[in-house]
Length: 254
Image (cartoon, rainbow, N blue to C red; front, side, top):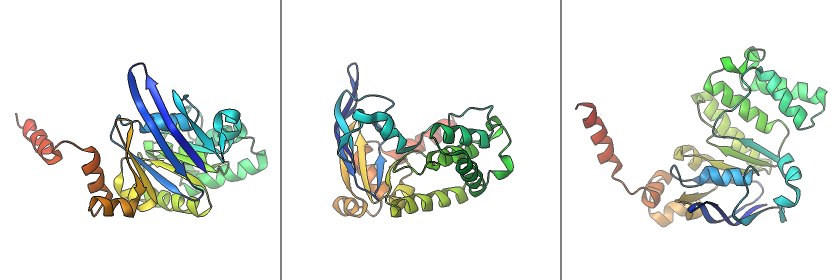
């Protein structure tokens, strides 16, 4: 079980995340939603130990992660929003680097790295520098690196960026398989259609505060809406989006 209790992050006078409470059980895929600036990425950075909360605590299996942050990170797989990779390494070299940092035995690492590159259709590019990869290929390397050490907790921050249709479908099945394996999965995204299909529960943030935290189906019932997109629109969108879109098109003609 992964628990966030009154998690808060302040930057001077700005509160980016304000008292978030969340519990993710084993085998659960939790969608983490919100518009830009809502505090999603800040929460993810606290969960991965990259930044410290101003107040509140994070528990894994009942223990504060700060008591053994290195041990907690060993159990963690993370796909960041931006594909920040070493451009002069090849895809194979990058996975080998990550595997060695994760203390995976060399023979096993060689087999797993090769298998992942094959499954993600990167085998033919395994000796090419990452600088020559497309955005989608870089994203596949990040996903492979996050899964390489068989982590117990997976945190995906906009993981579909740059992926083609086939890769998106594969990734959705990967997430569902991870849940069946009893993994804890936090899925932060703005692609509501995918979240609705792969997540059992969702939490919606607006200006750092939780405005909804519920089972996907139950949330639709409560909001009397047929889709998660409609629910999201009711909770956090305060603009007439169709009107704004029409005005953008009109501005093109000026």
